[in-house]
Image (cartoon, rainbow, N blue to C red; front, side):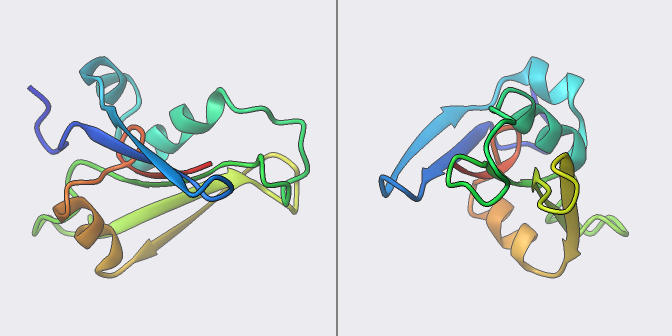
Length: 117
């Protein structure tokens, strides 16, 4: 049982205007915990050769298991991709209602949240 996770990922392709729903595997959630860990898992298998502004660069929106709860300091989401500044890992964290609303709508990422390809 995966407490705090809804068990599904929404993958969106902006170039083909399609989407796909994937099952969130419990072993992945256990190995890559939280928004940062899940974003790392999502992006580790991508092709890192294209320019950061290339359409092939992926963008991961992820939330952790406590997003959408009343736990203190947990109303944050992560957006990660290949950084245009360094050409390596880049991430941003933000607070507010967006992450909670995304999770409460039943979407969490490839390993929690929205994954834009």
